[in-house]
Each structure stands twice: as structure tokens, then as C-alpha cells.
Length: 313
Ligand code: SF4
Ligand code: SF4
Image (cartoon, rainbow, N blue to C red):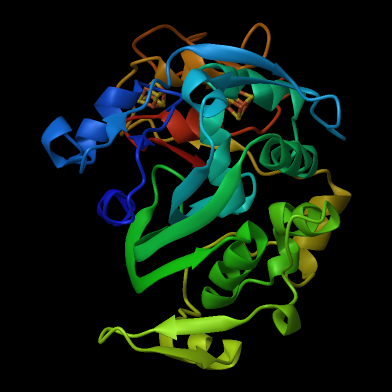
């Protein structure tokens, strides 16, 4: 991407991310993006926050963006094809939550504390920033316990679109998940950001030899899709177990695998709930203990655990 922008004559390009855990320079170096491999770009300043009012917002009227965001003319989102425990998948629209400064992200989960309201906030965030293009790396995707602790799976595709909803909905189709089950698609379409309707999306396949050809969605799915992709499919069809869970108030929840837990406390530190919904109540020699009555199911703990010890059951 950086090479392409350089070849296109883009003058001032910055690359970055604002991780909830760690910092931008560390994240870029982890990706292999050291200063000598940036094609003239620089690593973005993603650690200084700027308070931005957005009175037009329907759900979110204020953001703490990283400074680089407020100084950019255009933003290109480069996301990974991954599963996500809150929104089922994380793609083009969800990826842009990375524009919010570091720890503010966890705090945002308490304000926008369920999948629907979080998706609506992301729609406001999209409109408040100059997003131009979205590219999804699905060469190797992540299935299962995403967005941080899942398993790699070969999908062999790179998707690109100026419409993040269309892009994310093609991702859904490739993994045989109805785009309507993903809140960011539903609310993104309602907000007028894009479309997930198959009849409104033109798919152009760029083959390995560089040739371009329009294809039907069904052909793309047949060629590149994976029906066995492990993604949250709850709600696809009602069965006895899901009905029983609804009747008894059964709810998904984060669970720690004690055999993997290093007792590091990163999950506790990142729990955004006032007074914490998990703690070392049983002492530091045991894994943290959840208070599920307080837990808002934001899954920040699962996302930041460096040992992949937390899954959602
Ligand atoms: S972040 Fe993971 S490894 Fe660290 S205490 Fe929490 S569950 Fe254990
Ligand atoms: S315990 Fe985990 S899922 Fe529950 S509120 Fe805290 S960070 Fe979110």
C-alpha cells in the first residue's frame, strides 16, 4: 500500500494504528514496518489525542481522535479479515475504531455498550473522518476466537472498496454468514454509508495475471469462499438450545483458561467498567475472577489477553 501511494505521487503519507495495548511504533515494527521500509512515509503520531466535537452525530457527538487523524486529508483503512466476539466480524468499518486514541477505546465500550449501539457509534465515526478507501487483507484470515486469539485460515483474497459496508458484506458472503447478522452492516446501510445488498454491489475480480473481469457474487463465493469458516453463527437459525438460552436468560460470557493464564493482569487493567468486572479476587496465584453481573460483554479482556487465555462461551 505504501509503495503504491509513493508511486502515485502522494506527498505526505503516514502509517499507523492506535492499539489498546502497546503503542503505534511498537505495532508497526511488529509488522516489519521499520523506517527503512516505509517508501518515504512516516510512522504516524497516534499517541497524542485531540478532542473533536461532532454535533451531527446521531449516537456519538464527541471523539478523542489521534492527532494524525485530525491532520489528514484522507484515510485509507487497511484491515484484516477477522472474526470478532462483539460484532461477529471485524472488517472495514470496525477497523476504523483504531482512529480513537489508545485507552479511550476501552472507555468507549462502556458508553457504547452493546453491539448495536457500538455499530451506530462507528457510523458516526466514519462520517466524522475523511475515509476514502478500504483494503482488507484476507490472504490469511482469522477464524474462531477473534479478533486477537483466533486461528489463521487461508482465504487467499485481498478485497478493496470505497464502500466499507459493501466490502464487509462480501467478506460475510465469503464465509457464508448472512451480512444482515452483522450490526455494522445493518446500521452502516441505514446511515447511508454503503450497501450490503448483493444486487447493488459490483464485484470485479483482479486475477493473478492482473486481468480484471466483472463476476457474479456467486462465482466469487464459489471460487474463494469457505463454508466451514469458524465465525459466530448464533441466530442464523433458532433451535432448541438457543430458544432455551433466551428463555433462561443465558448469555455468552468471557471465560479464562487457567492453564494458559499467566496472571499478568492485562485483562483487569483494560476492563473499562467502573470498579472492574474482573479482578484477582482469589489472589494473584489464581487467574482473575469475573463478576458477570457487572460485565457488559465488551470483550476487551479477551481482545488484549497476550496469552490467548480468554474465550467467549
Ligand atoms: S490477560 Fe490473559 S494471561 Fe493475563 S491475567 Fe488476564 S487471562 Fe491471564
Ligand atoms: S470483564 Fe471483560 S467483557 Fe466484561 S466488561 Fe470487563 S473487559 Fe468487558
